[in-house]
Image (cartoon, rainbow, N blue to C red; front, side, top):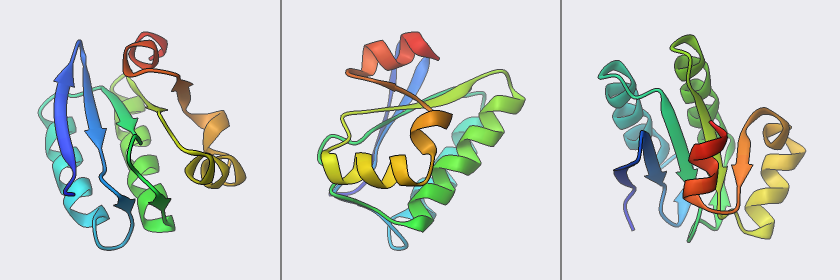
Amino acid sequence: MAAEFHQQADALVVKPGKRLDTTTSPEIDRELTARIEAGATKIVFDFDGTDYVSSAGLRVMMKAAKATAKLGGGVGLCHANAHVREVLDLCGFLSLFKAGKTIDKTIQML
């Protein structure tokens, strides 16, 4: 499944697909960069259906967080399964990003 992007409320929601890794990250990074340059300041990574996040995926998330922070926005995440959540926690991302139970709650936190 390819990555999906859609607008919800005032945030861009990114659904990475089954894997956020070296294969999928370049496409997601290009799309995120274009959307941020076009004015997106709030981004939610919806990990529903995502089974794996690699260091390349973490880089995409961090790059988006830095870019949106410069614009007064931020990045959040939701629906991470236990494995993805463990990776995010071990890398310290759960303390850097807002994590909500739903997309709407995550958007409210940003």
